[in-house]
Length: 215
Ligand SMILES: Oc1cc(-c2ccc(F)cc2)cc2cccnc12
Ligand SMILES: [Mg+2]
View 1 (cartoon, rainbow, N blue to C red):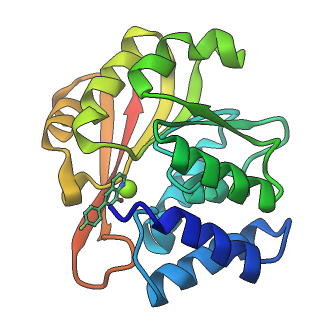
View 2: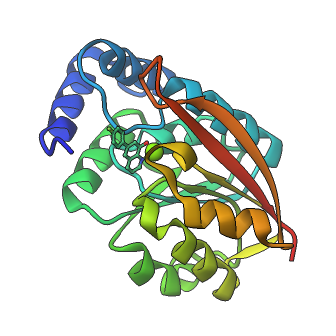
């Protein structure tokens, strides 16, 4: 990936978006990615699918794995109910720095907490660190080869509960076949697939997978 995209998108947001207006910041990022350069945000089309599942779940404690520039955290933050919070794990400190700036610019710094580090290093202590027992909604959007490992970790650490909604991005492209096989064959998950397109593309297929945890 283009390591210089995050600073460019941050600069573009600071110059073109309205400070404190989270919906405008989201729109400015989408317009930039459609017109100037593509980036690995979930985007507006798949973002609408995420929004719908998020609203249905109406979660209090939200976990995101893979923050990148903070785009999906912003999408979810604007739909959060009173006293609900988003915890988002980001392994790249460069991405985390940019995400923090964009989230603060949008005025959502109190609703979104970025946890810096690798998911397998952050997850074991996240409950006590964040004062959360279980998460009501999880959005998985990081390295595709880690989806299955991290979901199993969430189960083993007791971080998900009866009815927790897990949304996974990119289950077609780049794809996470072992994750899909795991959740679809497990009696503990009720799965729904949402076919869509890769972000900011018209002609490349992708999909989101919703899995409700029913142990
Ligand atoms: O939504 C995503 C898309 C891509 C991606 C990879 C190769 C491409 F040619 C285009 C897009 C990578 C991601 C990595 C992490 C989380 N999400 C991603
Ligand atoms: Mg993605």
